[in-house]
Image (cartoon, rainbow over all chains, first blue to last red; front, top):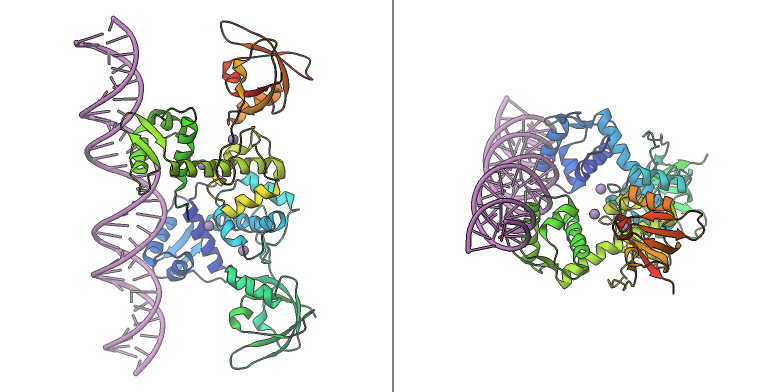
Length: 225
Length: 225
DNA sequence: ATATATATTTAGGCTTACCTAAATTATTAT
DNA sequence: ATAATAATTTAGGTAAGCCTAAATATATAT
Ligand SMILES: [Mn+2]
Ligand SMILES: [Mn+2]
Ligand SMILES: [Mn+2]
Ligand SMILES: [Mn+2]
C-alpha cells in the first residue's frame, strides 16, 4: 500500500536521508552530485516531492530540503532493503564487500516486503550490512550508532573497525588490502600534524600502515579502552 | 554490453517468444492481452522494435510479429532469469510454487549476469523451474521439451506430471490441492466425450479427480509406458 | 557596500511508454 | 460479393524524468 513511489523517487529519498543525517538540510547541488543528475532536475523533483499529496520533503527555495516523517519512512524502507540485500549477497552467494553495492542498488527497488522478511529471517535478523552500516529495523527505526571517525583518534588509542562509509569498489578493495576490514583491531602510532596522515598498527600485521584523511574520515571505529 | 533494453521491451520480447513458440506469428491483440496494454500501444512498440538499429522483431502490418535472432536471444535471457529466480526462491527461501511468479517478474529485470551465474551455480545448474518449465542454458539454448498435454491422453494411459503452464497463484494452489504437482503419477480412467472432462486416478490418493480442459490443456505429462 | 563567483531556479525541450478516439484493413457471415 | 464485425493502425495526448541554457538569488572577498 505504502509504495507507489518510483525507483527514482526512492533513490532521491535515500540520498536525502544520508545527507541530512547530520541534522542540516540537503542542498540541491549535493543531491545532484550524489545522484549524477543535473541540479536543475533536482530542483524540479524537490518541488514535486514537496507538493505531493502527502509531502515527502520540506523544501524552501535556496535553503535545501529535509525529509517529512513520511519521506523518512520511505527512505528507511529503501535503506533497509539495500543493506539486507547486501548482507545476503555476501552471506548466501559469496559476494565480496566490494561487489555488492551496485547489485543492491537495483534490487532494493525490485523486492517485495515478503522477500525482505524472508531474507532477514533466513539470516537471523542481522544488525549490520557487510560494510558495518546499521540496518533499520522492520518497523523502520535506525539503530543508534556510537562509532567515531578513525580520524578523531589520538596516538596510543586502540580501537576496532566498526563501519566503513564507502561504496566504491576500488576503494573498498584497497581497504581490504590494507587490512582495514570490519572487526580489525588497531593501535594509532601517530598523526602527522600537517597532512593528517595517520600511522596505524593493525593487530596481526607486521608492518604499520599510513593512511590519509580520505580514508580516516570514512572508517568508523569503536574505541577499546 | 548486450543489455540496454528497458524492462518494458524485455517483457514484450518474452511474451512474443511465448506466443511464437508454436511457429506462428504473434498478433498485436494477443500481445496486448498478455501484457495488459492497449493494442494501439503494442503497434507503436512493434514498429519501434522492428526498426531498431539491430532489429529485435520482424513485423508486417496486420500480419503480426516474430523475433529476429537477436530478439530471441534477448527473450531467452529474460526467461532464463525468470526461471532461475523462481527456482531459487523456492529452493533457498522456502517460497511455494504459487508465490514465485510475481516476485520473479520484477527481479528478472534487476539482476546482473553475475547474479544469474551465482544462483545457477549455487543450485547446481537446475534444468527446470518450480513449474517444470525448462530453463534456457547459459548460452541461451532452450531445451527441447517432449511433454504432451494431459488433454491428449486416452483412458488407461499412465503418465507423470512434468510441467504446468500457468502462473496464476489461485490456479496453481488449486492444482496442488488436487495433487497435480510436478512428478505426480497418474492413470487416466476416462474422458467424457462432450465436455472433455477427464477422470484421473493419482497414485497415492484415495479418490479419483475430475478435471476439465482449462486444466488438462495446461498440465503437461510424460507418458510412462 | 560592491563586485565576483557560486548555487539555484526557470524556461523550454526531449525520450519512453503509455492512453483514447477515429480511421483503416481484414475477416466472416450472408 | 456485400455487409457487418473484429483487428489493427494512425493521430493526437499525457506523465515521468531527464537535459541545456538563461535568469536570478545567495555567498564571498575586497
Ligand atoms: Mn552499503
Ligand atoms: Mn537505487
Ligand atoms: Mn513461471
Ligand atoms: Mn517482467
